[in-house]
Amino acid sequence: MHFATLGPEDSNHALVLARYLDDRRLKEPDLTDIEPRISLVDDFIGAFEELVAGGYDYVLQVSAHPSHADCVGRFMHRAFPVDAFIAPSRPLALVARADVAQPKSVLRQPATRHYTDLSTFAEHDAPTIVAALEQLLDGQADAAIVAEDAIERHPDRLRLIQPLGPALDTWILYANRPLFPDREQGPMLGANDAMAEHFRETSRRADRG
Image (cartoon, rainbow, N blue to C red):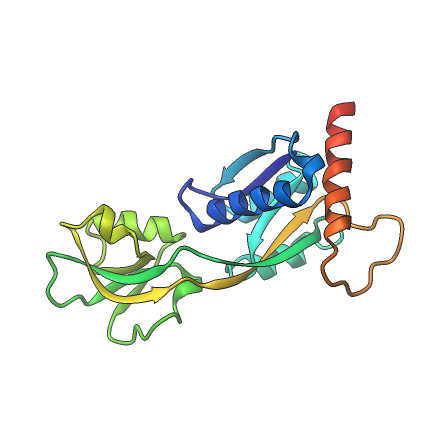
């Protein structure tokens, strides 16, 4: 099975996908022998295009991502939501460069722009939280919303302004065929058995080539 989500390796998307797959293996013992392949992508539009073309079996996307609504509309009836769950991100924080006494500019991924009051900063977009940290360390801004553990990894270069804690988000797994392909799908709660069977069928299709 081939999964795709937003990179890089230390992104929240990569973290949550790894946790999701581990949880699935624990709950479905017959899936433990299936070794998933994971591709980390730069943008979701390209990932969804590859999904509907058959290059990926599944794409994981957080519903708070700025491209989410566009992906849902653009790939309607071609990319199908097959699973949804709630998961926390890494704990986040508003941090500043240690060499800046009065930070005036801030980098933030657009989905994080309301996590705290940034009205005293000049705000600049970053494509991901990881990119926000990279650009901050490169001196492109005075502060950024990043994973809180960035302070531990760069203690001489960063200082804490405000801890923000983990974001609790809804995550959606998409496939190129629906969860129930042979019947109309109504509202569901916790269709874990159906999702496990979807994985099994994907594995069987891969084995058949």
